[in-house]
Image 1 (spheres, rainbow, N blue to C red):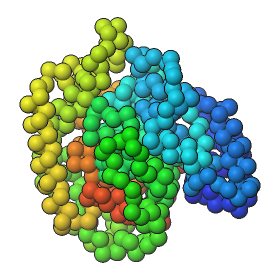
Image 2 (image 1 turned 90 degrees about the horizontal axis):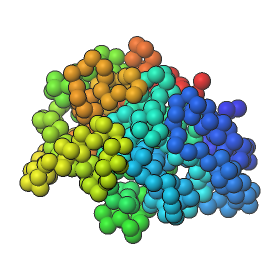
Image 3 (image 1 turned 135 degrees about the vertical axis):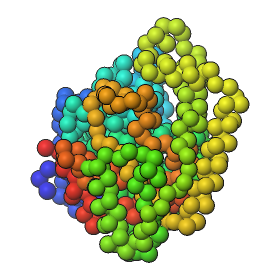
Image 4 (image 1 turned 90 degrees about the vertical axis):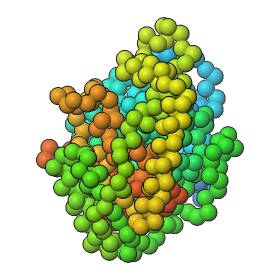
Amino acid sequence: MSDLTALTATQLVAGYEAGDFTPVEVTRAALERAAAAQERLNAFTRIDRETALRQAEEATGRWRRGEPAGPVDGVPVTVKDILLQRGGPTLKGSWAVSAEGPWDEDAPSVARLRESGAVFLGKTTTPEFGWKGVTDSPRHGVTGNPHAPDRTAGGSSGGSAAAVAAGAGPLSLGTDGGGSVRIPAAFCGIFALKPTYGRVPIYPASAFGTLAHVGPMTRDAEDAALLMDVISAPDPRDWSHLGPVPHSFRGALAAGAEGVRGLRVAYCPDFGGRVAVEPGVAAAVREGVSLLEELGAVVEEADPGFADPVESFHTLWFSGAARVTQDFTPEQRESLDPGLREICEEGAARSALDYLAAVDERMALGKLMGAFHERYDLLVTPAMPLTAFEAGVEVPRGSSLTRWTGWTPFSYPFNMTQQPAASVPCGADGAGLPVGLQLVGPRHADALVLSAAHALYEAGIAARVPSALG
């Protein structure tokens, strides 16, 4: 292919090995895309051209010697500006964070990528401290959607999703505390996985506690498996990490479509009628479910049967936000996104007993989903009940909603239960905006979720989504 930015990471590595092109050539093309994405979409907080080209030169030398540093050597990647990356500031979308260093430490996932020879293009935008499901912040402004720049890219990993969709590197690291890789993946037409909590180490620990996961945002499920093989390695700084992975995630994809045959799949279109899903979204997800049936899955319409846990999620989420800002000066508080300031005030007003009651509901929800997965291998829902709406607002204009959780009912419950969940692009609505299908597996079944998603990709599900490369 003449357009190197259209290739997946897996294809890039194969091309490096064959000598078809070099990491320098690929990085130059990706940097051009990154500059264009920044001008059109505001997807980056920083693009580091000099560092990326130096790393690409080093990777090119390793490939020429036949000594790649790891599975993603020479592959351009981007990193959400929530995760530490040494050599530059991690500003988290906030004027309350000083850019002064030293910035001398990598987050675990970033460190594993660096060891594997990845080329770091830059840091991607996030709402302030990753607090909401769209991407705009006082410090860095509004991030647009590659399919329609006046629409939101989603959030809170919106810059990462926009970068991948726009061709600025096939791999990105995002974080997900209530849907933050899956929401923008669905809106931007890419793949994202929220792994089982603890599968990818986190440091520093998130103020949002065990709701927060680090996950891959990629062109397809195969690239996500490749990235998971790198970033799931243990790191002693995370006391909650699950330990060494006993298998290769990429190896789990080898079965292809056969890996889906016979799987017991529960299809839940609207949580028992509780969620209003846009017709274009419902139709695209239903087609994706039909494709699973064609691949041999045994699909049954079934609802897990839980009540909306949003109030308990709010207690956990708002308390975490209050903890982030607990020691801020009055001047720092004044600089915050007004919506963030509101939820911090709400979180600070909730008691320890409120928090523990929310933990109790969370444990009950986890028990319920554990029993549900005794009957079903996978749960399928829409990733989002709607497609991307106007950029720069927390909720769609004209809706009666007040917080982003009002339009993300399919995402945050599975942060509470810590289950692996992925968004797979499955089509578009009448306006040509992408739709995502969510695959949810039982805890520790990350490989199963990736395998099913990969089978859908091999069956052509992503061909139903328009390209944003232009």
